[in-house]
Image 1 (cartoon, helix red, strand yellow):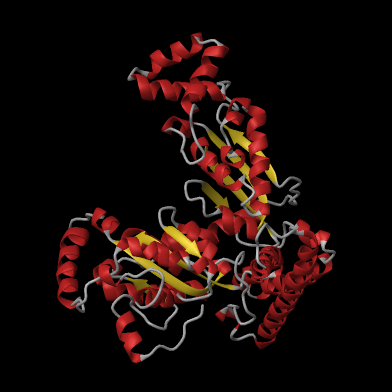
Image 2: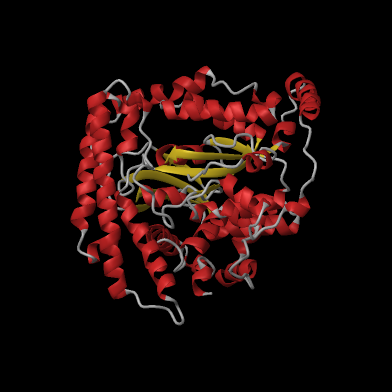
Length: 505
């Protein structure tokens, strides 16, 4: 991300609030909590370091924060020493890990591959991420991560860079072709200026042209998390097979020690974490000999009541009555067995009556579960994994499951450009997978499909569908959301009356 050379005065000012002025990994600190989210929110749509956004807000930006911060330079040394002694006593000696859970931290990681950023976001469900967006920004040609695994393979490194340049050439040509196509098919909105119109269709072009880019494309993210979750992420990064993961983990530890030294003492991966993946990959590869043949992008493979004969509606009603009656489950089961269809329908209706597009369902809806197998593009997956209340199981990026072609690329008559990028990607992937398998995922494109197991309760799916079944949602994840919604409605039409309600708002 863009980080310019600062004046000495700017450096001294920024040093008060970040642990590193120019490096790619740093923590934000000593700012009021309510200031950090609006600063972070700018980054997904701007190619600018969080640090420049902080500096702008401290000086002449649209978010004047000077009145909310101390005018004196904080003295951190004494406070850190005291905190260190406290943590040693209560966290290490007494195992009181809730202290680490209360330690909120704001980590920024700039210039990381999309391959690794997706892995990090899946490690732990509790942290809250915001990421630089390829939907709104156009990456430059230099935004590529070259895996350090290639350092001793000059020929492969040359092929890697050649493949990146092919993918980027196709990306640029797709953007140009799509802008031309969209300018002839997308009408201006009322009172929309020419500049705003061009910006709007350019962003649509970025959104679909990015399917040609590799997962080695650089991205950046900010994450709010507690120290306990950071320790968990660091252990798994240090156990990851790529050198990029190890390097980033080391940099995070270095920066974290500046503001929380006693919390960074237990971050080495266990033997289990270091060995479990390779053991299970070997077993799975030896046992499974069948050829993959995934015919459908969305398959409902399991749901509450599928095999035990209990209707899904009855399970939900039992949980509703249990939560609001104070009676035993035995008494409730007997009651539900006597209810008519109309009475059951009335209970479910009352459980969502008057619900609006911003409401969440009540807790009993968590009792209903659905499990889907998805075969979706990396571009789609990178959005889906943001839904933190849903459980996912995935394999690493691969070229084995086919790829997605955006409809606008078909309509614009430039599928050949996307397929040129895909062909170059797949040739490189095959060679890397044979010689340096840990580097192969970097060669996968955003268009290539990934197999995902999605295990969700009805409460979480309602939130997902309410966001992704709207015209504002990106078309790829919107299509997936509608397919899942249709499958749920087939087995339980009762739910069709409240799911995805925001699309009608």
